[in-house]
Length: 251
Image (cartoon, rainbow, N blue to C red; front, side):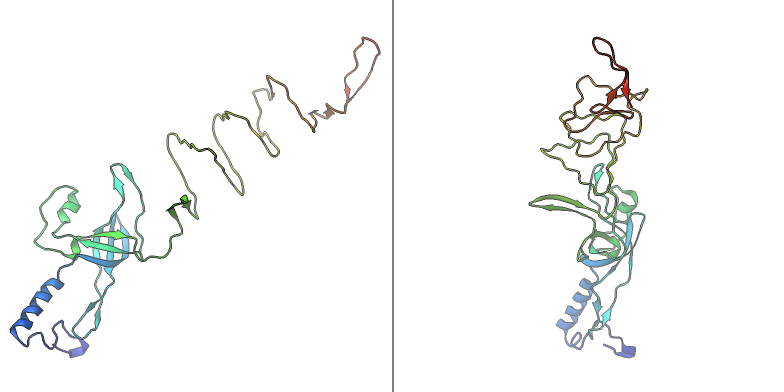
């Protein structure tokens, strides 16, 4: 062991005191070079690969911390089956877990097919796969599954795109605090319709601007106006007793 320049190796005071201790030191040194699972922090994300840094420090024989270097170009896990997947790629600063393969996986990563090991290395950090989502802050955009149901929360826009969308439920409620806009060539309602507020048509009802109905149009408390003429309170002119016709309503 040496304390020169404040650095100490991994060998301690008893590592070479006898044959057993020396053997244990050699075995521990070999095992220290094999990696299986480590907690890591994402440094960069690019091209479907991540650079990560293990965050559990190494220690020398004097207990001094020795930080790990950055491990480059590791593939990361994405939940996917066939053409179906959830895209939720890692971001710089995320904490996750790396699994390190028993053999060199570089040829398989490059070809995405069965291949021989790229080298003789075993349990090396270069053959890691990143699994994200450990020890991080509470998310602000998420899907929550609870006994009460499923909640989808996002501070940003939510977009759905599909050939068709069907919602089946005993009751569906849309609660929009600002506005609701529907853009469609046709709009069909199969059932009774209640409108609790004013209705404005910004475009013509048909090509001539006419509204037609095959049944009665009834208002229980309001009125119907034709231009400035009230249906309830209009007066007619040129009234003639008997069977004559009155003049047009008085504007």
